[in-house]
Each structure stands twice: as structure tokens, then as C-alpha cells.
Length: 186
Ligand SMILES: Cc1cc2nc3c(=O)[nH]c(=O)nc-3n(C[C@H](O)[C@H](O)[C@H](O)COP(=O)(O)O)c2cc1C
Image: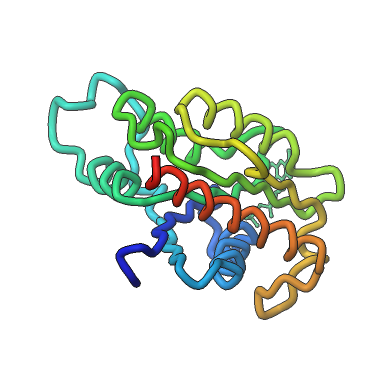
């Protein structure tokens, strides 16, 4: 990747091996502008339960690695399922670890929520956006998208078959890359 490239960390809120949200991150990776590269962070399950007492007291390897990845990333894309009308605990736990340390502060972020239900995803997305606001992330412009009935929009190969979904996600990532460049220029 060129030094002018855009390095994006993708985080799936689902730990399932066949997660539609993880599949979507791979599909988003294929939609990125040429200069951008997306790496999926897949170790949410290795982060300990957030406890401020543990922070700084001893070396928490998984937390340190997570924070370092976020620190060097130009931008972050999160794709999450909705569990019980909210964000999965593993994802909220991970985000809690970076509230005080600040790696997400001013970071351009795109948030996606996918659900198999026709009515699903939007409540988790709203909740995620509140947390991302608390973290001080850059959510300006077109930065979030809810995808209900996700299995009608993906084929068996994990490709997005729904043109509107593909177009919305492409514009989401384009906007994200634009914001990274604006940050660099400022
Ligand atoms: C315990 C549990 C609670 C769920 N609650 C919701 C919900 O509130 N809203 C929703 O849209 N889907 C809900 N679902 C369905 C998930 O959206 C579905 O399992 C989804 O595929 C998970 O995302 P993934 O494919 O990325 O793993 C729930 C699933 C489970 C197992």
C-alpha cells in the first residue's frame, strides 16, 4: 500500500464464524477505493471484561494490541448485529476499553448494522452511534447504514447482490476515505 493509502480497521460485532456482519466487512473491503485497505480485527473475544481497576496496573496484552491497531488506523468500519435491541456486549466491551485511552478520538468511523429481520438493526445502530459520539469519533456526513433482511442482500459467496445496499456502502467508504484525507490536510 502507498504511504498515501488509507488503512482501515474493520470490527465485526459478531463472534459467529458465519457472521453476516463479518461477511459484510469482507464485501465492504471489495468496494473500497483503490488507495484503501481494510484489515479485520477479529479478537474481540480475547479482550477482558472492561474494568478501570485493571487499566495500567499490569500489561493487558490484548488491550494493548487493540489500542495500537486503532491508533495507527486512519479510519474504522464497524458492522454489528443487534442483540435484544442493543449492541452485542463484546463490541460495547471493546469500545469501553478505548474511552479513556482516546485512540478513537476524532477518528473517522463508519457504522453498519445488519440483521436478518426486516425490522432489525436500527436500534443497535442508534445505540452504537451514541457510544461512538461519546468516544469523540468523526461521524460527520454519511457515516452509518442499517441493513435489515441482510440474507436477501448477500449471495452464498458473500457478495452483495442488492444494488442499493452496494451503492450505499460504497458511498459510505468513499466518504470515510475523503474524511481521512481532510484530516491529513488539516
Ligand atoms: C440472543 C439474540 C438476540 C437477538 N436479538 C435481536 C434483536 O433485538 N434485533 C434483531 O434484529 N435481531 C436480533 N437477533 C438476531 C440477530 O440479528 C442474528 O442472529 C444475526 O444474524 C446476528 O448477526 P451475525 O450474522 O453477524 O452473527 C438476536 C439473536 C440472538 C441470538
